[in-house]
Image (cartoon, rainbow, N blue to C red; front, side, top):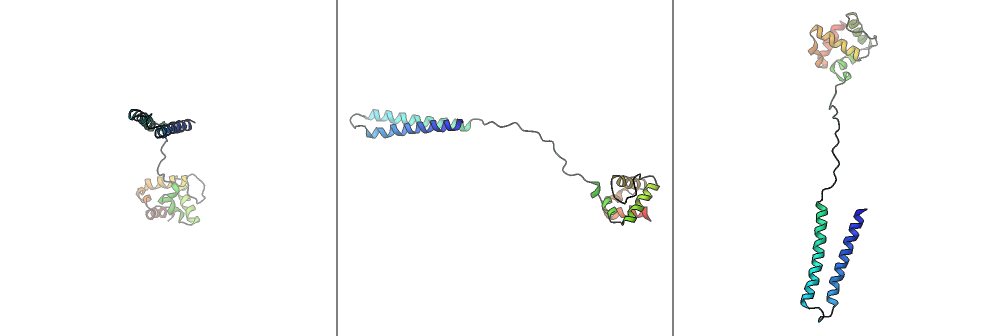
Length: 155
């Protein structure tokens, strides 16, 4: 709402300035002496410069900037148990072999879930515990070496 009023005021000042400048040459040469013409030109110049300075001050005035809002950072990456090398190696076995792995983990006290042949948190934790007890924890860092852990459970 304020911007149209400012623009209207600027337009009005510009129109009055143009009218006063246009009126100077129309006056009879004898009625307007050199001093009078200089006075009118000075007033017109002062009005124009004043308007330019006001616009410059408005442009440099500090603008409202909203306060920054803190956003809780999210973790950049999380490793799902289903994307681990242990899960990838487990998934490559047949259903009967996966059930045999779970059966042996249960028989040795590492696994308490059902023998469904699917890789979940229970199977993952049981495989980690078994590998730690057998000294094979480093073997779960790659898919190729995870096969050694599973093969030791099957055969």
